Amino acid sequence: MQGRGRARRARGLEWLAERMIAAVAASVVVALVLVLAFVAREALPVLADAGGIARLRELFAPSGEDGSFAWQPVGHPPKLDVVPLFVGSLKITAIALAVAVPVALAAALFVSEVAGPRTRRVLKPAVELLAGVPSVVLGLLALTLVAPAIQRALHLTYPANALVAGLALSLAVAPIVFSVAEDALAAVPRALREASHALGACRWQTALLVVVPAAAPGVTAAIVLGFGRAIGETMIVLMTSGNAAVVDASPTSGARTITATIAAELGETERSGEHWHVLFLLGLLLVTFTLLTDWAGRIVARWLARRRGEARGGTP
Amino acid sequence: MRSASSRPALLLLLMALLGWACTSAAGREGSDAVRIVVRGSDTMVTLAQRWAEVYGDAHGIVVEVSGGGSGTGIAALANGTADVATASRRMTEEERAHIERDRGPLEERVVAIDAVVIYVNEDNPLGAVSLAEVAAIYRGRTTRWGELGGDDEPIAAYSRENSSGTYAFFKEHVLGWHDLAPHVQCLPGTAAVVRAVASDRHAMGYGGLATASGVRILPLRLADDTLSQPTREAVRAGAYPLARPLYVYVLAAAPDAVRWFVDWTTSSDAQGLTERAGFFPTGDA
Image (cartoon, rainbow over all chains, first blue to last red; front, side, top):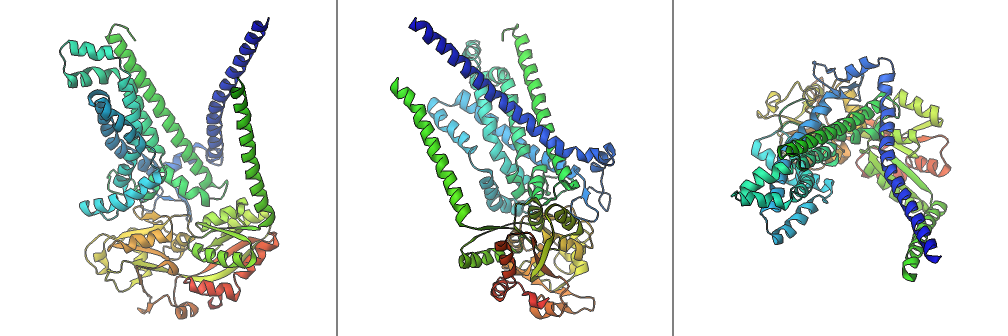
């Protein structure tokens, strides 16, 4: 009799625990949806007010005095061309990824395939610790050490530019790419490596021709995460990019990112003015772009996994 | 079994104690200390902090000062997150209408006179510059020092962020509301501009007279070829073209403690601090 009561209580508690965990998980999704809804609500008046789609097209058209793009929200009239901000964000992100991804992947490969257990125990936490350095500290280091050195070496007009920002940002991105890639590489079953060795491949051949392709979905996820981190970074780029809204392919010119613009300008903007709505529109576009990239990355990862599965006769 | 069941109870007790400690601290601060929140101009932030220290100590209240730019201060006043807004530019008609519609009539006080000056590096040999030349540099028309008689090196022009009252003043009075060139880099705060100019021989910047340390201030060449320096005499005589009043804004409906503070800023004690901070007292307007 006592046993049945205890069992019923245990089942009841388990039911409660499951519901609570489900509620917490749901709240995360609800929070994400609410964030998007709030940003969208503040951004939509740009379209809803006089002009609609035409206004959106105006935002992407140059309105500078000499036909170039101008982001001059304080002025008579205010000029709100968003193209330089997109170019700035993408340029700095590209530089950061170009530096961080090869380095992080090489480090991940080293730690998972080559390093002995003692080296691995030291190196893995050390790289992951780098992810804990506050971005404002990275910005400070870049501004005081890296920027003057690069300015002297390349004879640049300004110490702050997209290159310095990209390099500083790569320090923040690399640990994330490293962590996820290393986990993906380590998760490749030992059987694959052993089979490769049994067929006569050396360690490097195994690593590059067997393990990396097998871990391709995870490695793709790592790069996508790195991209998301890079394009969303605010503090580092605010301090080191020079905040010049230039449309330029050169890495040594200044840049102004969407994130730094929102951070620097939102505080001064009159609530519900056009500038306010455009800043929210920028935020919405940034979030949408990041989500789309994440989704595309997931599709690529799944396709790679499926292709690998098919190549090996369907074994997952 | 006993230890397992008492752990959640202990945790709850700890959280309750923590919550009680936090709320009681907040309550104490709210009931005993009056708090005035001042936000706005980076040009005026050091001055406002000095005022805050002296006035706060004398009257036993807490005056919180932060910068962020004149635009930020005005927006904070409009949003209700600040009691007093400091601004290095006059509030626009739209901003005033917006605040008075939402929060009632506004009071504007001139609390100091400032001179916006053009900085160059101490090693820069340039003697003087005209406003037209400065405008040409910041509009991107003039890009090398050679065009002004110096060595043939690119000019690294720095500006304040567009939330700054100094930026708005510069854009209106020097550029005539034309666009700044896109390559001009925007730094957050006058101190950052001064630092950038002090560390680069080919840099130029602009900002308030008070924060100009470690850089050379360029005299302005006027239309009749005379040179105008940002001195008290020149400002008083109206001979320096970039002199500007510094403003403090407060709601007419603000609590007495706030309004007494604002009144005090134009008193002789406060104006003494104003002069020591590198500004000119309002008597010179």
